[in-house]
Length: 151
Image (cartoon, rainbow, N blue to C red; front, side, top):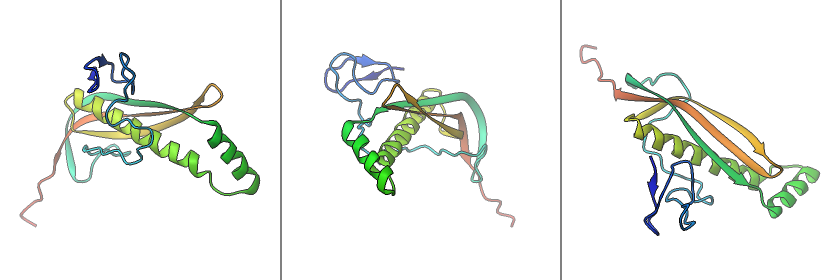
């Protein structure tokens, strides 16, 4: 299902984070935003302890690709020489993972699901300086379990 650009009103397929008509960023896809709000239960396990899975809607995926800029590369080389953590790259991983989860959540909603189970991530490079983060899971309809009043 395509998304509608708030800037120009054009439509673009969900896999794209930039409007194909005017180039505006898709709402919620800001690469500098670390904390993307996802209002759907999501888990790496195949079940929820607190919910009952009523129906399976199918596999869902989220993909994102980020470019590594020159300053980040220089910082990483320096960190590699002196030791320590590469904070700039860690931020890119966090942003990318959150964007992939948000994408997957949106696709699950399109299937009529309200949760995603069995989430997995795959990280790889594209070309010389692009990081690709893919997530996959199963879209489900999950309802909260009602506590047994007899106990």
